Length: 228
Image (tube, rainbow, N blue to C red; front, side, top):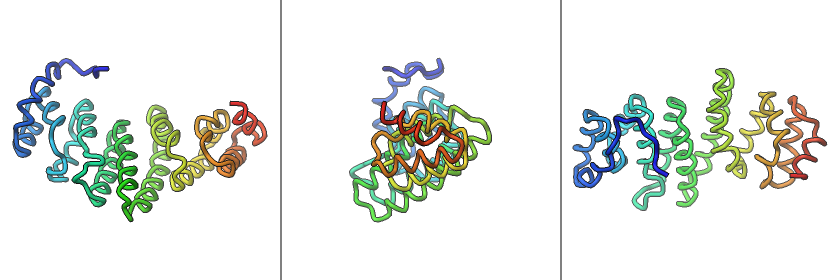
């Protein structure tokens, strides 16, 4: 399905063939100074690994949402030419970008970059999962204090519903249950959304934490989970 974009980006795909023949400095210039349709086209073909990280971070801050989403898509996750160090760089960028813009595309890139580190067998992958888990706990606390329900839903959808089999993410998840009664109620009322694929020990732990933090009684939540 084609994306719905504001009118100023109409016809942006027509620029792509020409953009693919441009050098990285020329593409950077287009993104810095070009009109919206050419900026989007340049973002769709640029090799971000060749761009000064400070420039990329500046783009995260200033680009309109449609272009920031294209920027996220340009992050070279699982590039054959990539390395563990570059994957870690993209993880850090995606965390900072999501925190700054709250666009779910950066969550998708973050988790894909972590998976890329696993696929490469990076020694630093475990530490990067831990770092991300700590970050998730802090971000959820902030979003909850601000009442940003859309962003909280994005984290549930793109992270907790898919990555609780990673120990660090599961620990962060349980910590959030303990700190936030609304989340304890949410998890215990809809346990299969989060817990269906987990080992029984983790299912029990999460639902016990939820019941103690203000969610449904453990026996009720356990029954809901097993009847789903």
